[in-house]
Image (cartoon, rainbow, N blue to C red; front, top):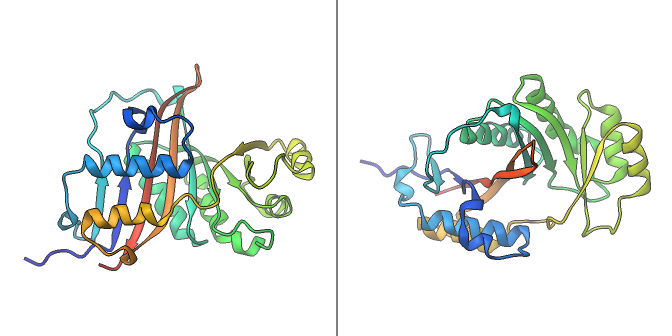
Amino acid sequence: MTTPKVRKIVLTTNNILEMEELIRKAGQTTTEELRGSIKTTLNNWDGCKDDAESGEVLRIQRSINNQPSEDGSWTKTTVKLFLSNNESSQVEDAIKTVITGLQLPRIDTVIVTPPDVSDDATLQYLEPVWRALEEAVANGTVVDIGLADVSARLFMELYEWAEVKPSTVQVSLSSCCMVPPELNSFAQQHDVQVLTHSDPAEIVDEDIVSTITSRLGLQGGQCQIEWIARHRTIQQCFGLVRDKAYTLALSCNG
């Protein structure tokens, strides 16, 4: 029997709020939290790369106790998506993977961080990503969509061009100490929610990738991150975070 080659890895941490070793570490950066949750997931996974499906996709997740599902009207799930390129297929794959993994009828909000968030980024570069998000809204798998870390100029250009308008824009506190006045004014005029965040420009480092590949007996250069989704579900009445997790996809040549 031929051992299947691993062409893609999909790793899901499941609810990291159940990881006591992470909860005890206050003040972690996003990268530290992601790295810790991946290591815990791999430590609790008893599979191997030979478990790859016929489509050469290897799925890794931490075993959890089945929890009763809740009425979706009482909860809200938000996904922040970090992309490695501007291809629409990455957005489509990430949304489908998260919805399937969480067994959701839809995602309430998807916020995308494009791979190029420099001041030189153009609307043309963002168009494939945004078209994929608009398609997700059109087919009912996503309710609201937004952007993170783009310049005020680019956000305003995209808003005027888009058929489905962004409802949210996130601004990194590491790049500026305050929301640009022109963006704040535009958002107020168009009823766009402005949020700040402290995620680093790149949340994945070589240590995270090598942690996964070494566990599978692969060389570090054989796999590259495609996308990372951080998803959080809150109980709307009380604002309590019920579930927080990461899902990431890697493409591999081995």
